[in-house]
Image 1: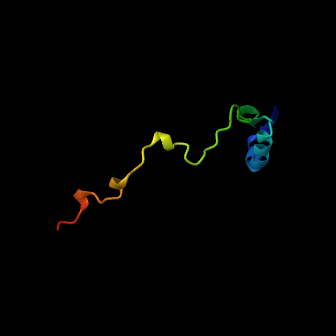
Image 2: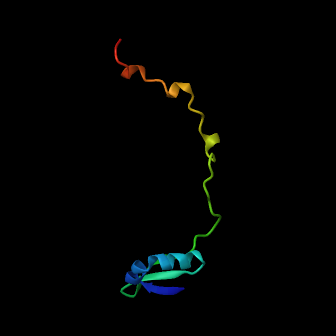
Image 3: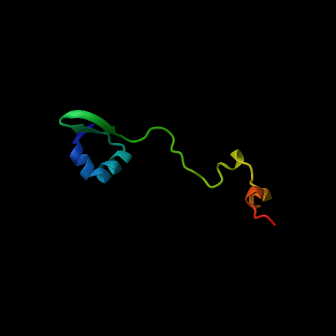
Length: 75
């Protein structure tokens, strides 16, 4: 685990983020005290796929596109 001052972590964040994604862990310090850790995520990577929530939601149907009666102009 590498210790990094907060101001350096802020100015070189993209570099530290890239290193963390490759498996390195950093401890971010402020005034010499540990404040946070930057480390790679654990567990399976979740990727969204087109249509993955399709079975959770019903199709909208024709009724969805019709104008609401309460907002229709009087004839």
